[in-house]
Length: 191
Image 1 (tube, rainbow, N blue to C red):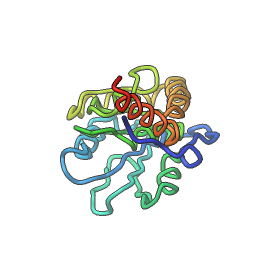
Image 2 (cartoon, rainbow, N blue to C red):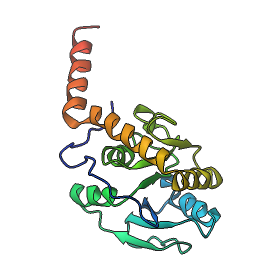
Image 3 (cartoon, rainbow, N blue to C red):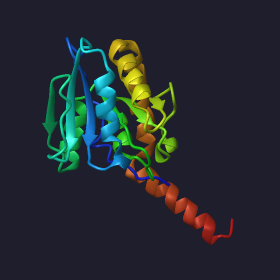
């Protein structure tokens, strides 16, 4: 049973066309399990003329990629995280292992096209090629290929984002709590 999202906070907004650059977001965290170093390695593999802009939420002391324009975003509250996701066309979840993967679900709910690793917890909501692209953990080349694919294919970005936002609504805190309650009642009844 995964976490739930607050649909009044994490919801899609009307997106303006990407313009001349596609905005790619990631959460920057130290330590190998979160996969930020894999993201940095993937960015280094991308063609330098790919029209990208990078946004990094999270820890202030993580290095920013230098191959493309990059900036940090505040991430201290759910509202700041929602604003971060709303600024992204694509959200990258490069984690090597997760119990659930709440940021990936939040990004889907906000209408981002998602690239995630097959890190465990995302299997509850990630449907490869339907609402996201899924790559192996700790594989910067596969991550770079997925980023490039989405950056160059606006219709795929839009299709994945629309389906992801729709699917994420089934994971509201209210819906998750109701499913958890039903599971507990079934256990108590001996089913």
